[in-house]
Image (cartoon, rainbow, N blue to C red):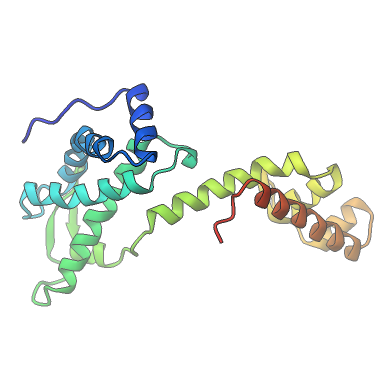
Length: 213
């Protein structure tokens, strides 16, 4: 196994991310090199897959580059956590593509073992949907944002309706009729308050530039 550079400290990583935002290509190259140890670590899961380890690292590096190019600090996790998912996703897509082009190989034939010693079959990979990690992380970010906005922009009754209607903060979702009965108001009034509350949330999103489309 190659000897890789020592990973960045938190401070060094943050500084490098800022440089990357400014279009510094050398900073991006440095970030890739400093995270190659992570690529190797994730690739080791598939080291018994009859694939050359150097090839696995090359494929994983593609995932790392995608991660560095799309990472946003407000995703709520460190770059390493996000990158590990992107790297693993890239490797899984590689095996899935390989399966599609290997018609002679049985789907039930093991291609190796994972780090826990469990056999990995092509059928396992064939059954996995291609996960858009970037989209998933963006959705998680938006969800966190709306949870933060609910108590900030809504009045007490509006907040109760939205939280109850959509089962936020661990609450069980309720119908408009159930909410109306609890608040002792008409269902139509609950509907109007719900629409008004959602409009407030949309406006808050717009003002914070959280909508991407």
